[in-house]
Image (cartoon, rainbow over all chains, first blue to last red; front, side, top):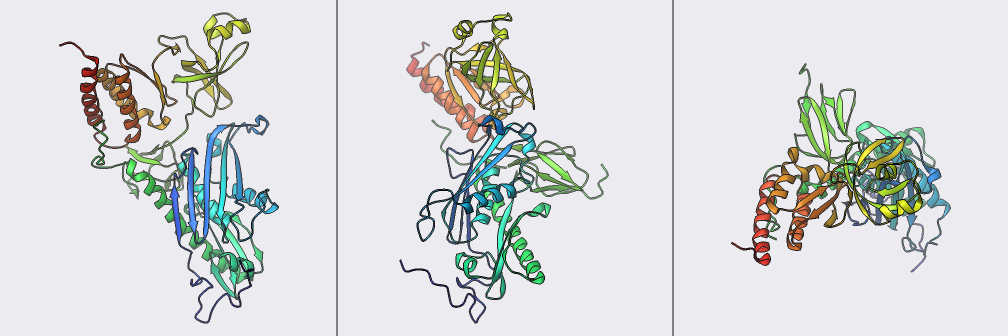
Length: 255
Length: 242
């Protein structure tokens, strides 16, 4: 495969981005809940070329025992990129970047989880990035909060996340890998939309105050949109189990 | 009620997601909900319920959190001098003290070993549990103790109330119609004991159906139907007299 080249222009004359989106457009998102049999809760997200699988275990007995917290559950989170997730093979050993992302994702989810309901236990979150194309920490948070909800864990609110940034002099939302690499700034935001509480905000690159505010607004708006997709994904999975009127037509009654 | 500004967003018995706004106004937040200012939100994936002005959410899935008085079925996982560790399908490992069985303070390892061994199933009752200590079990009651025969199955702990039904209606109907004995642990372990293996099989299928269709209408009728159809076949196999 040819070596990736920096694109000449990230935004063309008609104002479209490198993948044909307008500045305020999100990549297409597909969310699926309850995809794994053995995990207590699971979710899969496909956002553009990103493919991320999340499994949640817990609340369960904590090991090693010295990690126990007497008043609430410990939340452990591991973000991991598959060796085949990037263009060049990624060394499977946990990198500095993965360890950092694990930590920021954990901290983005902790305010939402009502861990005081489950003292002396642990909730494990495993995030496996199968294919990466920029914004995986945000996509990971979106899927992880769905997996937590799927596991039946009490939460104040679903956490949704999206990045914004500056590319080719313009503030845009939901950056892809090329925009992230060659753009001027990247601003991932995680939000609990119904509570209007930001749980993650990071920035690399430079933004003026006005640009920052615009980017934050755009990212928050995107989070609100994603929050609707999340609720929809949960409904899609569980609506069938809860009928309000007639019983579902299954041939189950006769053994 | 003041009735100043009562707005229900979720219908009664509707699927709700964590963080979903259920209602605004003079409502009291009950189980699995919380209130900020005037708004009541859900905290869990479940089904909304409104009684008077109390809003609650019945969870679709949850892990088993012991509570005092619960009947549970567990597996012995460890033997100690003073008792047994029991896995009760919960984040908290339970302890069954030897004094509960032996009626005396000091026991020897060989004694505890003789009564229950690792892998044994026990039917027990939770006698103590709080946030700071692991649950304590007892087998000092009628029908409690080692499980010697029957089949065990595991269902989601959140579906146990549906299996039991209102004031035990579902479970007593199930017992009557199938003439099997069922022990339902609050922790999601169900023990089925029947005369014939065919009936055991049938009852297990029925329990699985109840788990799958716990939140649907007309479940009782379908359960009844399924047992009647299944039983008919079962009787022929048994070759029961007229």
